[in-house]
Image 1 (cartoon, rainbow, N blue to C red):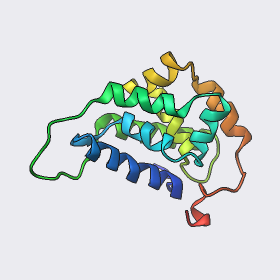
Image 2 (image 1 turned 90 degrees about the vertical axis):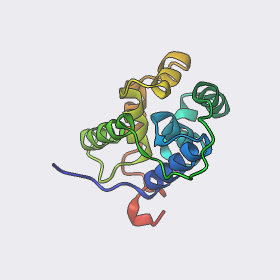
Image 3 (image 1 turned 180 degrees about the vertical axis):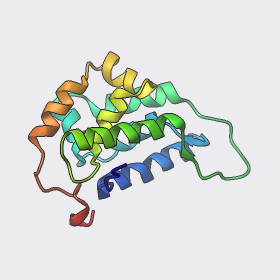
Length: 156
């Protein structure tokens, strides 16, 4: 299988998603954590795409917090790993990256992966906010080849 590298910003999204899961006392990184991480990095392609679609990022975060809730406080600190759903999001992001002929998996591909996975995150995006994968895909195609901090070569 052709595995594409993650952009620097995508690595930041995953690190931030881990922090989100830890903050909410969850033992796994869920798709909602990935969406919260995207929203928390306003300069990444995915957040910029959402703003281009007139999505209020503060509203997205409020919806995520309301839907997730806090897990039980644990005495032992856990390092949350990816849930099966989050793994599928990344697999779908890789498919989107290939379909768009991208050199790496950017945050826009992760956003598309989130929209394709049945989860609280996709429900918030599609049902509550009307974000559709085809719209995101079309915008992402238009940004292909535009140098940003998303590119692993940029060192971000």
